[in-house]
Image 1 (cartoon, rainbow, N blue to C red):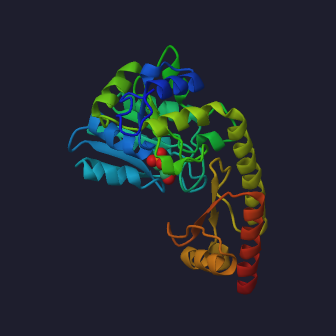
Image 2: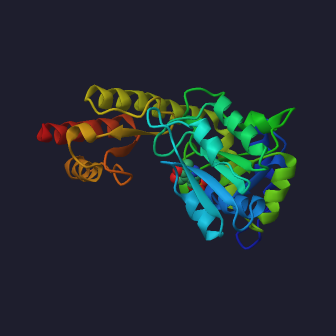
Image 3: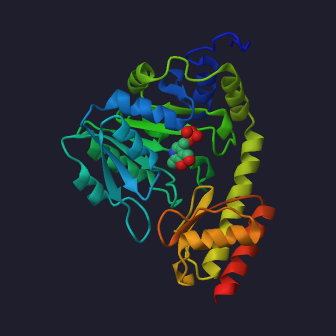
Length: 317
Ligand SMILES: Cc1ncc(COP(=O)(O)O)c(C=O)c1O
């Protein structure tokens, strides 16, 4: 790999793609890298859809899909998640499929709900979409944090038979803690990866990012340590909020939880502001009137948050 800053990087990030291939048990030819997975989503839309084509995304979910679809003159189609468990309503999703559907983004685990669409439901959704000729992306930005390791859609493109209309996007921004490096990747079949690479930037990442990505993937111990901190923190924060009568969206699997602060009789944005004023802890309360998203921190950070929440809730009650 070339390393000097005045030289252009390896345009196809061969060493990094080989490392990603080893990590996931796929061929390097099935991997495409980009400056963050959100950048690759532009290339996915450009490669696999046409102007006027419909791009399905969930609600609530990562809003970037609909923005990208609109920027590219595609039509975003929003499918609401099931109210009771914030998971995919397969009937609703099936009803949203039309002859114009070209792409479906399913976020696993979902942001901001932290809920994880089961792999079996994802597979069914992909089979239904295949009948319309649509590609289905499993956005797995947060999947490393899931309690179980067998939930990724990567196996659907790994072996035989492959599900040819499935693509998985992943990132170094979350579990690997390298958000500022801007590095992400997509895994598909050899054929879809080739199509995506054509629509991708010419030099999608630099040598520094490529080397750092390889080092991060090879440091399994560090990854395991980070995941353990997040999983334990998630369980204790979820128990804390549920115990306070503030329901957490069920079975959270990301490095955040979504909490219903409605029982406090306070708008989510006001609650988030008060938590910040009280404990200098930043949480997001701008999704809707009832819900905040709380990121999992270290044990000390989580304790500070719980203290601030107790004080804010105490003042209300
Ligand atoms: C669901 C989801 N996908 C993708 C991304 C973008 O990640 P990246 O840093 O790889 O562009 C985010 C960032 O918050 C996200 O929430």
